[in-house]
Image 1 (spheres, rainbow, N blue to C red):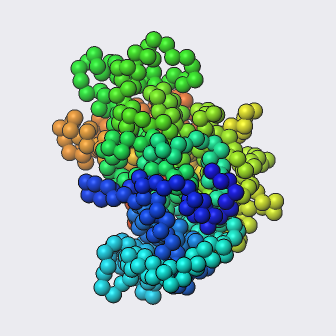
Image 2 (image 1 turned 180 degrees about the vertical axis):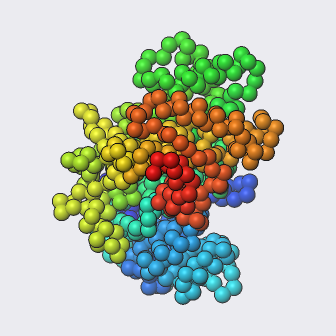
Image 3 (image 1 turned 45 degrees about the vertical axis):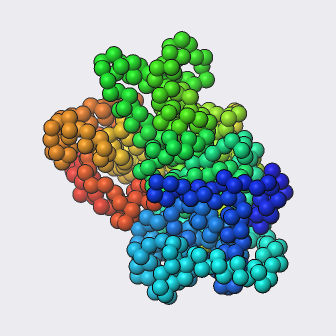
Length: 582
């Protein structure tokens, strides 16, 4: 790759100079795929850039609220090349946060794909222009109309596009990405061309990809900086990319696309793990015993240890079939967005799926550190990325500095000054350690390190992760700050509850409220508690049938719990668990 490019204008020029690629981007429509060549992709971006320029969008914020697809990428690149500032929005965002983001970012134009989105946007501000991605609607401009207009502009002034690229500077603001807001109001993270481009160059140094043979599969929201940055890299490498139409279809599409690489989040890896196990356990008693042995071995064996005859036998009889659930040629999965349990990490590596956990924040574009094929250590988030400096503060907090660190929070200098110090260090808010080899381990969230009323500290994230590790619960929320001991709110997994109800020949509601399930949960927690210090033990719990929702502000678009809101909502249930101790 030409590592000299400093901004997206130079990246565009670089892609133009490379050989043609007909089989480039693939968008799922119905039962088939819509395919774009590289030439079509770049030409559409050119036309959209010119139309954006004529609309006077330079230095203005324009929202993208459409599903992940080649069209999303075209809009993003074109707006950035024209000098506009893109504001990617989750299509499932709560109306409260959507209103805040539109007002905070001064958005005047939004690309959408449904009447429902239009109604939500216009409830916040009727003056905002909405442009539909799909078919033209009377009284509205559409994506295709802008492409057509840009083509006319290009014909009349063929040098204008190159002139626009020449105006771009590496420190120009490219995008404002809003944080998920797990503990309050979202913040708009301002990222420049340099921030984003630095990540492309860093990823290239850490992972090897082949332009002709590698196939990338994408199902995560492009509004999330993790998937978006990876997509920037895929495009720079000119990989074939397939976009899923719905996360529910991922299992089927993996077998159809048969990719070699994809980015994942731990929750998906958990779901795949439990589905693999349930399916593998179907059969006679001999098969069930073999499967239990295979899963025990895969979740406990050190992947770096030598394989013996048992491992080779289990691979031929069990692991080989498990790998087929992810296609037959997966050679790399990169996990981010949340902490990955050691058990899952071991499992995927032991069944032959190369898995690499990374860590970062929206504020760092996002990667700060990551495991790689050359350096992969379970329990860690890998070593610092090229161009990123790291250190641990006296309080044990991980600090990072480099070209990937954000310019600041939009309209919020006070918050910016709180996280970026005078020396340029980003205070991540996460507690961490760095071992002698340079591997970074996140030990807890600074704000989520609970302090009980007895003065003991508890890592809530670690306990929550363990509580969802058996597949019974979709989410777990630990409470204990300023309280005499630790309790938990447990949100039951719908699929698990359905299977339990069938087994009990009952309804899901009755199964949830049954004494049998209560005792199952008590036994599970009691076993888990044996591994904890006495002040960390979960002393009581409540299993909840209602699931947190994005619209209610209890769940972020990236599926993380908004803990503050949930603690307020379930205040009565929490107080009940402490009523005899207050």
